[in-house]
Image 1: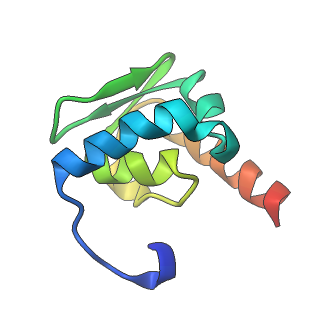
Image 2: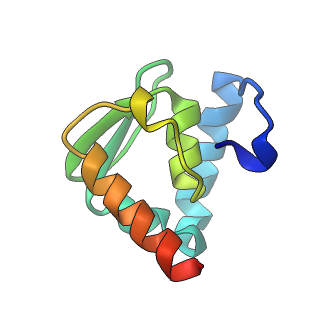
Image 3: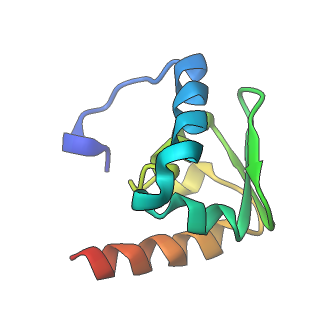
Length: 96
């Protein structure tokens, strides 16, 4: 689900900038922990960050994950998707 259940398109260039900013400020959102275990690579723009098992997909979905929101998991591929999903679920349980 998108924030406030609002669907909108995210311009890829803007999403890439957001991803880079989250890399600098994402500690409170838990994204640094995820990036220590998985490598995120966008399929629609030039973006790659992190180490470990690969996750690939649209930059907008990677930004959602980095921001602590649920991405559209079915749009992500790679060996790191399940690990990222488990880490995301654990973070959600602890914040509830």
